Length: 96
Image (cartoon, rainbow, N blue to C red; front, side, top):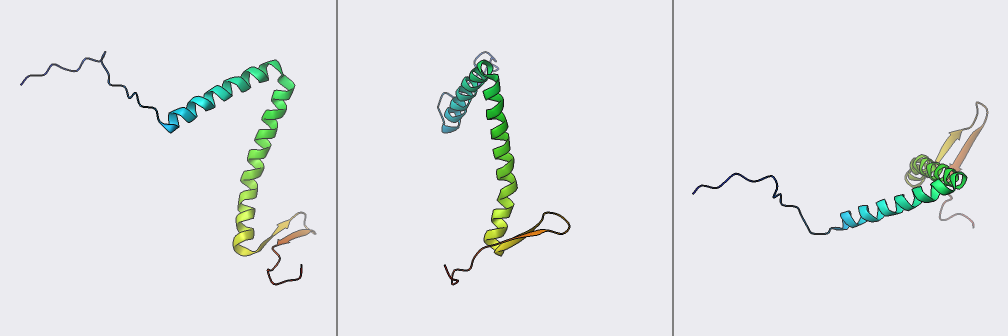
């Protein structure tokens, strides 16, 4: 039986809503509101952006140190040539 070729004007579009599409929608809405607020308050907007970037970078730098503290029990930071900072987890059977 012959079928006509598909017409590009009638494309099947998924109409179901997923959690991912809802999350993207809310994130875009929040971003739009933040951009509008930042346009009206440029100094506060710059402070928020700087703080957020600092928090993200600090969290990414601290994550390996926390993992090392939980797995190894401690780590050493070389502050200068003469100064080392030793961070250890206290033992569970030690004095309080």
